[in-house]
Amino acid sequence: MGEVGELSEIFQWREEAPKELSDWKEEEKQHLKELSAVLLYLVRFSDICGTDLGKTALRKVDPNAIKYPISKTNLYSEGSQSH
Image 1 (tube, rainbow, N blue to C red):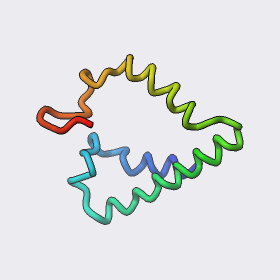
Image 2 (image 1 turned 90 degrees about the horizontal axis):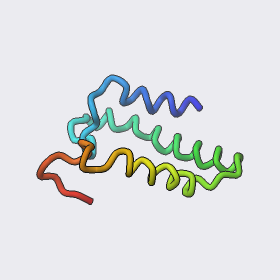
Image 3 (image 1 turned 30 degrees about the vertical axis):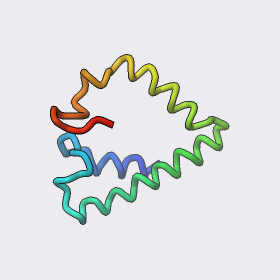
Image 4 (image 1 turned 60 degrees about the horizontal axis):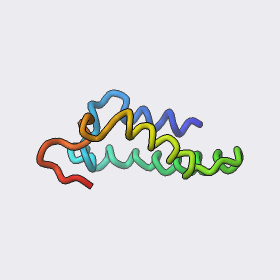
């Protein structure tokens, strides 16, 4: 479970991360290998628990989309491309 803590430390003292971490130095981006460690941990943990991780994530996405509509978030600044 230490991987989650390591990943959070990368972002803990920073402002909101810009898209593609455009203002990060290359050596800072190397720490992002922790993303894959956390992903692998979650996949393994969900398997042990007998939980379908994809379905569980979707059950979380739908209520969050209602609670936090994209129009009220700052995920995209004016003039940026939407997905």
